[in-house]
Length: 97
Image (cartoon, rainbow, N blue to C red):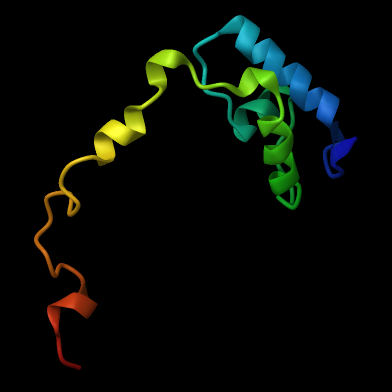
């Protein structure tokens, strides 16, 4: 199925590029940009990106390497305000116009 008409990329091209990237480096994070570069192409209009990402999600080789799982969760736990004082936004500080 044709995914990107501007660059003539099919779902098979995406899956083959992902399989190649996973075989060459099992720990790599696969992104749409890396797939475009692997195919020697680049996004033109961007209209295909939602379908492009859906096609990536259906591939078995998209998985996140085990040692990278949970990193985001670890950094977001704890202080909800990330060390900033409360009321740091103009709308919260009660500034008058």
